Structure formats: C-alpha cells, structure tokens
Image (cartoon, helix red, strand yellow):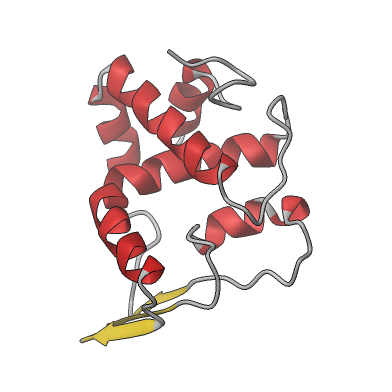
Length: 144
C-alpha cells in the first residue's frame, strides 16, 4: 500500500492521471494493470530513487518534478526492471562499458537512473562530483 512520505512521493490517483495523458502504449498498458501492480511499480521506483546515494530528496517532497520522475521511473521499471537487476550486478562487479550492435552503455558512477529522470531530479543531486550512466541506442524512441 502506498504511503506518502514513507514509500512514495506520488499517489495512485496521480499516477493514473499522469499516464492517462500519455499517447499510445504507456497509457493503454497502465490502464489494464491491476492497482496492486501499479502500486508495486510506484513503490519500487520510489525505492530506486530514494536509495540512490547521489540524491537527497525529502521523503515528504511535493515537488512536481520529483513526482513526475517517480512516475516516469515506474514506467521505465515496468519495461526494464529485470534487465536492470542483471546489469546492476555486472556494474557492481566492475563492468565499465559494453557494446552490442547498435546499443552501447558506459558507466562512470553508481547512478543507474535514466537520463530523463536525472534531468528531472537535477536540483537534488548532492554535488559530490556525480557522474552518470550514458545509455545510447540508434534511432531510439523514448516511449517504446
């Protein structure tokens, strides 16, 4: 269950409203997820952002950018969660970069948030020389 200030910045209602405005797949997929699945994604995204050692966001933040970042990360996690766990393990073991066909990633620091999430949360980085994951794919659509 979502508890604002404990395990989420966003409510389920905010998430439903946010995704209802997206065109195409995100809107239609979100609409058919159960409330329980939606809450799990929202809480998981909160934990992913809140445990990032480069960020300092108050638990009770009502900043619209923080809420949007959490909701975008919920969608990202829906699409990439399993791969993210595998990749995180490799990074923890010292992986610096890899490339396959038209896809490459390089890692400079322990920040594993997508660039759009990093941009939304830029006011909350703790200014300790943070570097980020650089993920690039040729001809990539943002909302695949």
